[in-house]
Image (tube, rainbow, N blue to C red):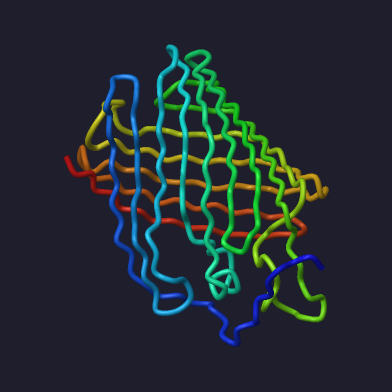
Length: 261
């Protein structure tokens, strides 16, 4: 079938993966118009992924008032499912970004990435976003629209006899010429005075509809709570739900961030 390598199906099924991660974050401003944000980490697991250094670096340059152009590079593990972990798949990518504050209420952004996977797969991705604030804080209602496109060089190949992903080529979502659009509304309400720093508290709710080129329709809804306990400590609780005829997903995230001087 034109592939130069074959994966042997491991017997273990990685439903639970335990490990340790050391992560460092940096924010640099070498120039008044230039900023660089970097997350560097090393992750070590008892089974599954190999130990390797990972990174996610963003640079942003203010080309004009309201217009920012940048570049992103990253190396990350592909933890899409148990089989992608069992095959120890990772990916590295790079691509340009832009963000344009067209008016105080209207923002347009986008990015392109070229990504190489460790199993010799390649993907081109493109995103564009359009946000319009219909009302201003402390009660902000925002209209959101997104478009996403991706094109893998090699699609996922699965043995139809198997009932799971064990031993497949490219054991992650790898379609050819896949795209979707979604649009919706997001509400955020600040319950404390709008001052930069400590004690800001807000909650948000969101609902989006999505449609992809495979004619699948999605309902996406969620909410979050954000609390700046001090000027360098932030707590966030967020949950999102996807419901459709082909795919259901629930994600809950709790984060506690401490920013060092």
